[in-house]
Each structure stands twice: as structure tokens, then as C-alpha cells.
Amino acid sequence: MSSEAESGTKQPVVRLRGVSKEFPGVKAVDEVDLEILPGEVHAVAGENGAGKSTLMKILSQVERPTEGG
Image 1 (cartoon, rainbow, N blue to C red):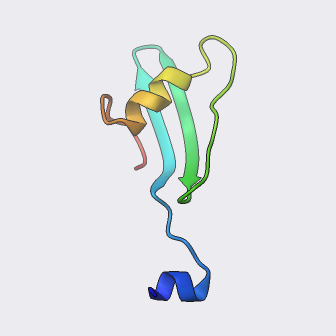
Image 2 (image 1 turned 90 degrees about the horizontal axis):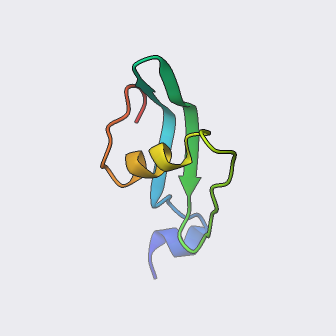
């Protein structure tokens, strides 16, 4: 058994800290923190233009954030 399983703590499979993305004249994503642990399911919801697609592009490495990581 791994020490992770023994201690009951899980390491995140995804971790974003302070991620921002700017386009000319628009800040599409503003200082987002996201942490996903193994087995978790998350949804991203919001109004049109809220930055959902941009955040997913950053997560999938299609876009690079202008800040954070």
C-alpha cells in the first residue's frame, strides 16, 4: 500500500493557481484557482463570455495563461 493511501491524503491530478488570460482589451480569465483530486467530477458553468472555454483551453494546453500556472 502506498504512503498516500495509508495517510488518507490524495495529491491533486490538476492544480491551477492564480491563472489569468488576457486578450487585447479583454481579461477572459481572472486569477482562477482550481484543484481536482482523483475521483472528483467538476462542472464549469457561467454566462456567455464568462471565460469557460478559455479556461478549458488553458487546462488542455491549447492556450497559455498570461499569469499564473
